[in-house]
Amino acid sequence: QVQLVESGGGLVQAGGSLTLSCVASVSIFSNWPMAWYRQAPGKQREVVATITTYGSTRYVDSVKGRFTISRDNAKRTVTLQMNSLKPEDTAVYYCNARSEYWGQGTQVTVSS
Image (tube, rainbow, N blue to C red):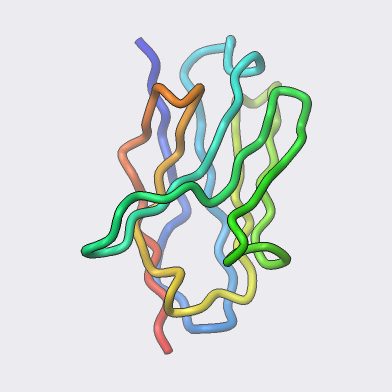
């Protein structure tokens, strides 16, 4: 059974930083494309950042230059470094593997 466990969410002031981590329960993680999604209240879930098995990354325009996605296959971990946070970044952030498996989500709240 595949499990993705996220951590690192919390409350931060605008302009601050947070680091989200997602640990996978399976070693085959290294063969999977990974992504971070977010869902704000009343809005659809949207992809924030993706990373391929080779480390190529893509970002939604609203976070380019502020967020960085990375992965450590040895630790079965994908990380989202979030800098210069804005109130509009407030959402539940979800880790996704292979467009199929989801973590439980972690709340990020940015106060103005």
